[in-house]
Figure 1: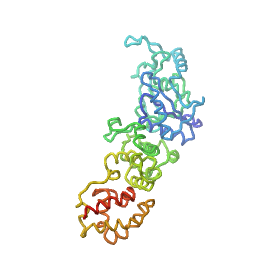
Figure 2 (figure 1 turned 180 degrees about the vertical axis):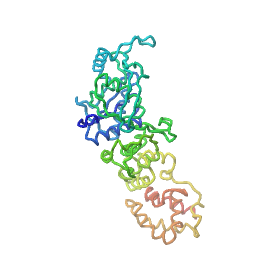
Figure 3 (figure 1 turned 30 degrees about the horizontal axis):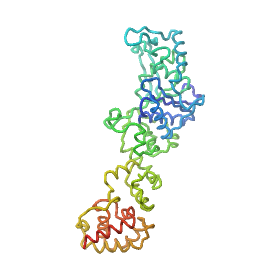
Figure 4 (figure 1 turned 90 degrees about the vertical axis):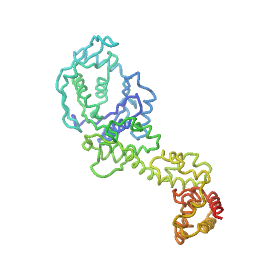
Length: 445
């Protein structure tokens, strides 16, 4: 830091012209982790000077997505939760007038375009160098920038000027942003020097890339935080995964809570190369959180059309089965829509020949009769997988599990492949199980 005694202040400055992108979410996270790691503050700033494209619904979506991720930004010194550039016209105007008066900027008569005049910065045509906290020494010759336009008028500042003024007034000590902003840095340093502002530290993080190493975009699938939320991901999983895109704690750990990330986060451990976004790895991380939440965490996400009309033991059995299969809550609906579990809603259709296991040496009918008999003594309210297993396992082990459980599977599901028949029986409940076993026995007469 230029001033080692200064309190660390970072900011996340999205433009409310679209949904919060995965890349933006990771930038927000890195700013948040760095500030909290050093006991500092982190502010949310909406860069909404593009009046034509900025939308209130995008602003609300960004704020809501950040809150869902668990990133609690600090209130500004004036007590506001948000810093909006659109509310700061007078401040920008004052600085522009000061720059024009000092000669570091001037009002230029424009011969082209709709505007007759703009405000241009008087470029000193010098070399600019800065020490990036991730990439090391970076130098630019600013001559090629010429006299850049910094405002459309005294009342309409453009991006670079507004950013420099806001960072100064927010007290920002560290600018942590994507590497696509590296070329913006010399422009902003020139403006800082003209305004006699201190220079913050810069850290440019690698971009998030698609598997083909192109820039991650909509054509690669979901790219906004809200889409991942709708698809049933845990916010903790998304934060966990995004933190590991371009950053590594220095060991093999892959599961971190937000508190653990704050404790471990270090800018020196951010890589320079692009980070590949692998949704299968994200699903793996999310699966950890699904299992961690257990049955109780899964139950609220079961759609009503799955749970309606079922007793508690049946619903719990369905949740336990899904817990072993799904990686996101969105998978639940997808599995059912694909017809994977149609047998839970209607009697299966199958050929009686399927009831005999291909490796069986005996008739399945006595086994189904015995299963029926053993389950008769199990009360409906106790018809759980554990109880069913205790009732049937000794017989199945004595007669051969394939001989016993294969016809039971087919009788209950009509399929060669399905969850184990003990699980299916628990999901169906005693009444439906007895009915399907009776039907299978009739087919074997």
